[in-house]
Amino acid sequence: MIKKIFYGWWIVLACSLINLYVGGVIFFGFTAFFEPIREEFGWSYTQISFAASLRGLEMGIFAPLVGFLVDRFGPRKLILWGTITVGFGLILLSLTQSLAVFYASFLLLAFGAGGCTIVVTMTAVANWFRRKVGLALGVMGSGIGAGGLMVLLIVGLIDLYQWRTTLIILGLGMWALGIPLSLVIRNRPEHYGYLPDGEVSSPRVQAHEIQDKGLEIGLKEALKMRSFLYLNIVECIRHMTLMALFTHVMPYLGSVGMPRPTAGLVAGAVPLIGIIGRFGFGWLGDVFDKRHVMAVATGFICLGTLAFGYVHVRWALFPFLLLFPLGHGGSMVVRGSIVREYFGRDSFGKMTGVIMGSGAVGGIIGPTLAGWVFDTVGSYHPIWLVLCGITGLTTVLILRIKQSPL
Image (cartoon, rainbow, N blue to C red; front, top):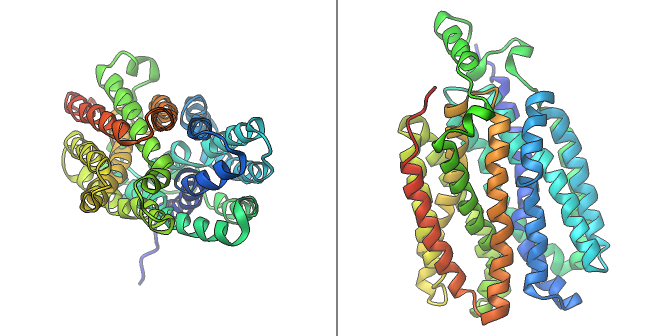
């Protein structure tokens, strides 16, 4: 008799596909729109980069609010409305004629993405898994990495139909994909006769469930914990580096003489290679101390950023593509596993929202700072060295996090 697939894995698949599309279009794909928009309007790198910072509000002002909402109302409703809003945001962006409309479109995209990306999808998955949460988050996170495929698609669509028509196509695609997938999501396994990980009821499983409910750490208590402070600082710095690089990867590679099609391949390769990091580090986080695994991942980001600063020497592209994507993909998954382990299931959405809110501070600073550096000195090289240095500090902070109290 064939064993029935645990429904939690269908939720993982649905969240993975939603992350693939939203991540590919809004986060990784924006770099492909950078030059066409600049050529049409003549805006500076700083002005365009600021829009990417507004996009980061999905993990800033909105993230803590979304975290509380998802814990209260469940992920299904938020994902449905989030995908609808993202579709409207992309279509509004296609109508841009001024900086005001340009920025307003990104605010709408940030609001919509807040409802259907990391905070909500990670909560949806964490609700259905406990022992296998690292693997499940790794599989779910691979969808974000696969979003790198969207970069190549977007570059091709822009070449064929120009950037405005491309945005309309992408907005309609968001509705066609996101709305049906949102209906697959279920809030908690117990409501449907399941237990986390698909386990059957037993004294051992009941003990785990009692532990999950009895040892939850609330937000007020977490705010007094030094480990929680370290996690917030790490996420701020991590996102500063990631968002700066993902926003400026194609303009930067173009500035050092790389052809646009090749730069598009590199931009798409980063999240795709990151899939290996999501799976690999997610599994390692279930087996070894999550703090040590996370420290290795951030170390990879640090070294990869250093290599990125020297890609004008073509061989440096290889260590960059080896280290940075693995660290980027793995750090996101292990961070989620740490939050699940340290603060419990019922607080997962709130804690993730607060931590990602801190990440958004860095996400707002990173792209704008990189654009300002290029406008000021005519080179991206200094910003990559600075980001490499401060990312190295995150490894030290992670190792100072205390053992999980749960």
